[in-house]
Image (tube, rainbow, N blue to C red; front, side, top):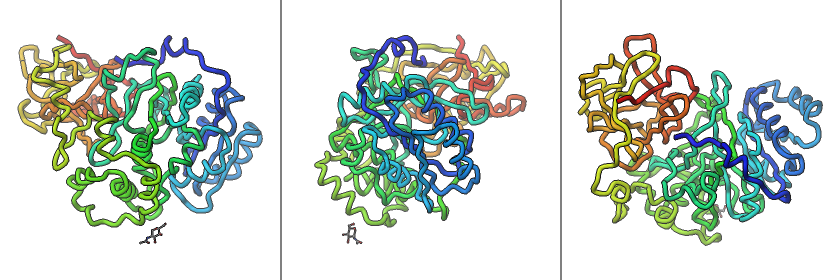
Length: 476
Ligand SMILES: *[C@@H]1O[C@H](CO)[C@@H](O)[C@H](O)[C@H]1NC(C)=O
């Protein structure tokens, strides 16, 4: 089920005359070791003739070792291609990247988070696509580095989407997008990007309006640039043969300087500039924001006009036809009909969802017909039909032929629960991966048992780490 970069990627070769890259890494109070792991992996795993420079932007960190010690380290062990820029006040990730990009002189910009490890042959597949079409923006597959053990594991290939709360989510790649002439190595069209890691022609980055400098610190900028790319004539792809590991932290370790909700401020700006009539979809979920101020957006509205961009409706129709549109702007033809048709999806497997470590089965906490019911581990009872799950071709897990295992997309820290099957993927898509893990596509995490020794048997989503608390088997 998990596609990992195996032989097909290893067999690919890339032109020698690729454009050179400036790698821009913004950091704020990053662990010294994590930053060095990022920088060293870039220096060690990028052919020297393709690495024009690495630009480190220190966003006015407080940590002492990120000052003199970092400068000394760079001079001693990484001389030549590393530049360190120091912001004199906190600018945030969004303006920080613009500051780094303004100093860059390579033909291609590559943005990386400061807690990554690039894999072998990570850059050539990205550069090759940009070389072929400078109006294409590309993302590597983001592999998982556990924040607890720092172990590296590969992720399934998924693509970016979003929900009407304007949160990014992962989606399984629709079948129609897979299996072109290059099979599993072909670029995959992605409606949005996660934001931390991508590469883009530098001149194109500038022409397309960089980022919205009225956005603060962090949040929403990834959707804004994704919409802008597609709506204004560009393309956005995930490149399966390029892999970069990323440390997934359980919580964002820092906030904004005055504790503002920058995600909401930024989302409002993007809604007012790019969403047209579909901003009503956002406001119907967040009516409190309808009258909230969002600063001056006239420059961004002007940019959209100047670039002659398409409507948001065009984007939904052409780039993300799988998106469900409830409410006032509902599409005449809901994709649910396309996905599901009048028939039920084909059953792939049927059985109990067995947890190896505890020797128990996943069942409904209350009645299995109760919408919203949580799921827990209980003793397996081989005569009990309410313990039977169906795994179908839509990647849904249906309990007792009734309700689907579901993740809340707006409150992704909530544990999974049983909900009416909606047939539109995302929050109800699960894949069985290597290590017997059960991977939830939209949150990019694995189903995990919280208290393996306790009597309660609660489950929650957690970073996939291959541990025995995350091993499941659907058995007939
Ligand atoms: C908004 O910004 C534009 C250009 O940056 C400026 O011309 C305009 O006066 C500003 N509007 C307000 C209400 O401040």
